[in-house]
Amino acid sequence: MPGATEWLIIALIIVLLFSAPKLPTMARSLGRSMRIFKSEMTEMKNDGTPAVSSAAPVSEPKVAPPSND
Image 1 (cartoon, rainbow, N blue to C red):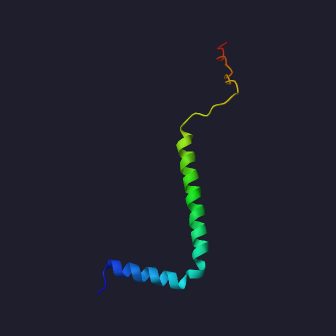
Image 2 (cartoon, rainbow, N blue to C red):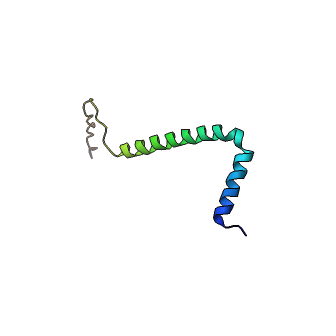
Image 3 (cartoon, helix red, strand yellow):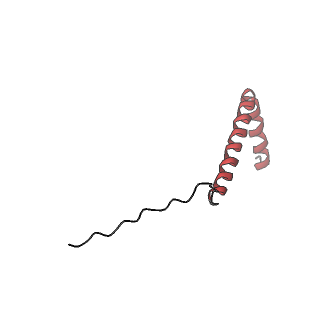
């Protein structure tokens, strides 16, 4: 009975034989996915840092409490 390594080699050969024309497309798709994943991870890391803005801080309007007349 074949071991894990032999099954892996057999599966790899089958994938290469039956999906050879699709390999460039699959590799391109994998590359795009990795780039998107990396950019999202970078964006998530930068979300915690405050952004530098040149605008003046906005002050909230003060509301007077209602009078009890």
